[in-house]
Length: 140
Figure 1 (cartoon, one colour):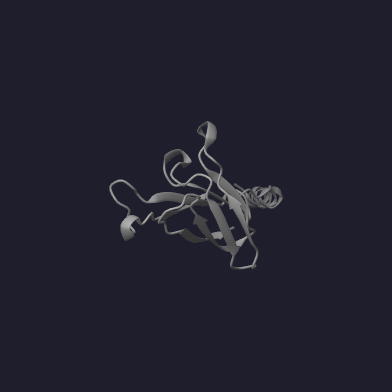
Figure 2 (cartoon, rainbow, N blue to C red):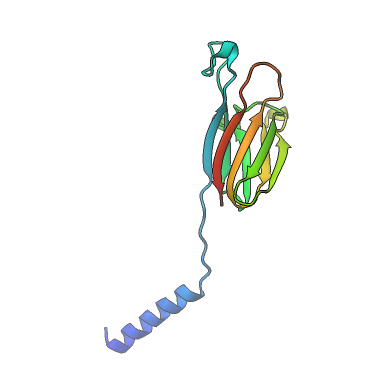
């Protein structure tokens, strides 16, 4: 390959790299957390009441987090629970309610938190002795 041909190939590669759109696909990250039912003061649950598994899914959309179940298919979090959130980076806050799980659709709530370090608290809709589920995570 002569020097002129090498220079032309290098120039084409550099020009192609500069002109092509950059597409970086960010993978969604799942952050699991639980709501310990604490029957009789036992934070690990019992044989009849297991810990409730929830998850925060971040990275699907910028500035957005989805609270859902941490088990297969998005199940596991309590239906119709209240979700309180606080963006620790910006001070923004809000609340939402998990869906009711009707028609085979698991409970979920999508929060528009904005980018930053976010803390969420899930308060079970049912009464009884429970400890709220708490998680913090970075929302891109």
